[in-house]
Image 1 (cartoon, rainbow, N blue to C red):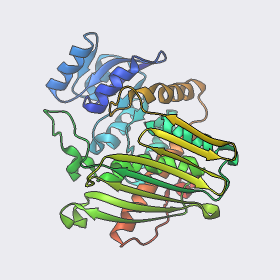
Image 2 (cartoon, one colour):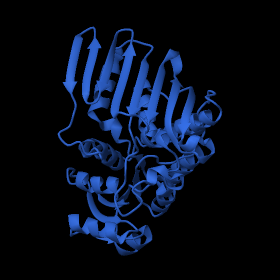
Image 3 (cartoon, rainbow, N blue to C red):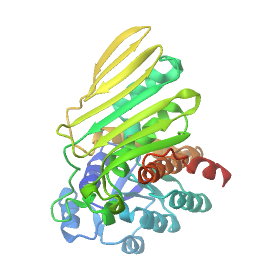
Image 4 (cartoon, helix red, strand yellow):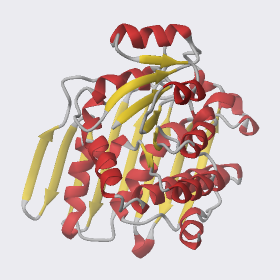
Length: 344
């Protein structure tokens, strides 16, 4: 499969390296409006063709799919352009910010017979394998309780030379930490619980104390699932520490992943696993082969596409509901996405 990477910042450069570890796809082109970033791509791989726009690529050479790694404000327009051109699409999170955007993209992909695939790489991480393995077969009992804690002392920075602090610019990022890291927590929760949450409640801390600006720097989300399941998600860009913790528990045990160390307690005993990778690169290149194998397998099979495309909608709807709740002082909100997706 011939791939064009669109956007050659931190994520795009990481993706170029990651594609070298797979056999089902190869990067044949890189798109970026910055001459410096295109030069960087050619420096890393002199055989690559580089272009400033998708239109110029499409006029010059054939590709089968695009991998969109730009900041969020360009995602939807590029997804539409690529799907309209007959290309399968992988897109970095968030695939969309509004549920209506997500539903329109899914409709376009289905009409064109193409796959729109979210680059939800945490779903292919070692920590997620531990958590799903503990939940599988009812090992923890039920109802499940989950607590996710993501602490940062700042946002992740982009590449020098092109707005390295774009995550703090609402016109580019389209949201704050809820849209950024919260998206990962959203799809992880729906995967673990096997459904979208019934309600979402959220309180947020806003940059400069101004909710109207839309830049959340910390947030607490409470998700209510069926049969009494709950998930608490705490997110912060203003912590004095850097830490990740994912805890899922039930009456029969618990799975706890804390900064790369996993502990699973069940009736079978205690299992400890060190998940810390040798390379702590923030693009998580080591998770990519599993994700791309899933994407390529779905394209080849031509079936099973509803799973990733439904996840696009439910994830978008969950985060959109969280923002709506935060502007209403934490009032519970019902995400609109799943019922709307099923009705189409």
